[in-house]
Length: 79
Image (tube, one colour):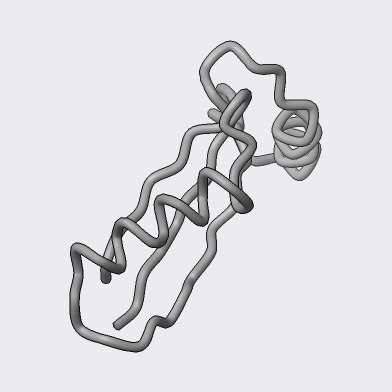
């Protein structure tokens, strides 16, 4: 089974890397970029077929390791 955990900064948290990417895109001549927020994506392959168990395990992993839940949100998807 494959899963994806997407981690993004919470609204209101400053994103200096996103600002740097935004500036770089504009300097490359890419018009219409209003703002950029960056994040992380983890593609994880799991053994087993129990989706509920996998979802719970990945939420636990995100809470403990993959995301800093003080400043980041995460989304778990079974793909």
